[in-house]
Length: 401
Image (cartoon, rainbow, N blue to C red):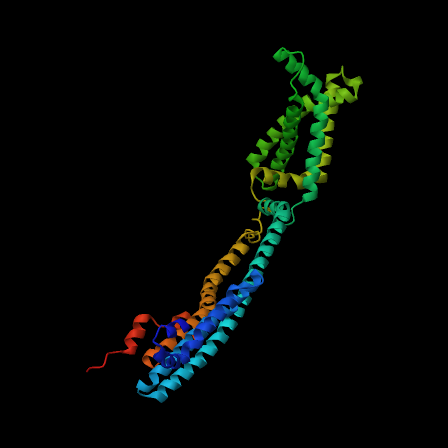
């Protein structure tokens, strides 16, 4: 400013200094503010200065320039009272804009922290729910398979006992028949030693035979219970063949191994084997076979277990929803909320700065047009008018000569 004054002739310097007196101190204030913002002891302090004080300082400088420059226009204005009132109200709006700017920053920080807490809580809930579902997956799968194959009240004890007995019987038969079977297979294949899979395959084959024996008995009982005579005759014939096969190929070998004295008496061996088969089948059938064979056949046929009277099974409970459906609904709801909240967050971020900028524009418009253009404060971004509507509302036209 001194350079500008010194550029005039000596006799005009005092007059120019008097004329520039209202605004001569503002450049010095600008220099002080520039030093204040450019020199900071730490980056955190510099960031705090820029965030909290830069926009209010710029608004203050704009207000000072407009106010001081308006002094030069007072002698030439019409409606000076209205102009001064508009200028004072602009200062009031500026003070309120600075306050709303600081409060808006605090609100932005609070909303951001709240979003972080909500998102972290959602992630923790999702991780905990996923961990719980993974840990309970074996039990859920077992329960669903149980609901699919068996209705409530299924004889689990009889079913497990039947399976254990089938395994035991197949193991005994495998041990007794293994030498004979390996000898026959070695002669057929012309190899000195049988394959390693002979034992497991023999065990599976005998296991199926034992389970099939119980299934035939169950089919015979069902045919008698429903009084279907043609099926009764067929199942009796099938049961005779089953008994003949098991006695001749399985139980006879056991009798020969446990009673060597009867090895040379074929008739005695067959009689004892038949009695053993009847005794074992009768004992196991009346103990657990009649209760466990029906669930076994239902499991093998992939059909629900029916009651003894042939009534349809009770309706199973409603299928449980997938474990991810709940979190998915939550994330959809949270996404919708996030879209709505993002608009509010945009208001929170933009309105503090726009309040300060609108207050500065009001000072300039008061200086030029003697009236502000923005009505502060803004509650939403939608309340900020467009530039075209502002210009059309001013109706600034040059005076005609």
